[in-house]
Length: 121
Image 1 (cartoon, one colour):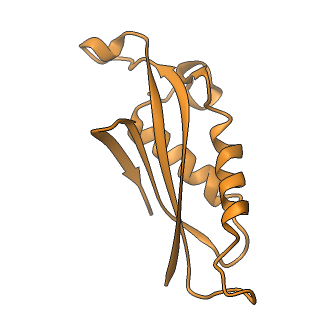
Image 2: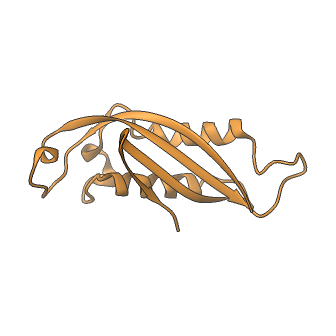
Image 3: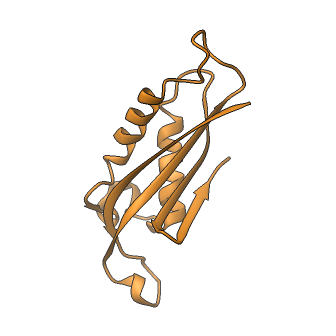
């Protein structure tokens, strides 16, 4: 199995519904995101996929979050925009855009240098 990793980032605000503490208030993060994709084989050029294409795909997905209040995005109308849920949404969005033979393997989101959450199936 082969695995590629790319990192990107976005800035966004959120607040956690039902949370008792500072995070119930609107606050922002400079989120760091690592996306991993995998394949059991390589294409004719000896690659899982072109890094440039993967980076572009990830940037396209993150654009839906960048400089927004996550609570105001339709995806989070009934879903708390926790780091765990953000990672899962990014995973699903990336997975739906990958070429045949390439699968999403993990997405990890950090809301700070020391706190992050990952999602994989």
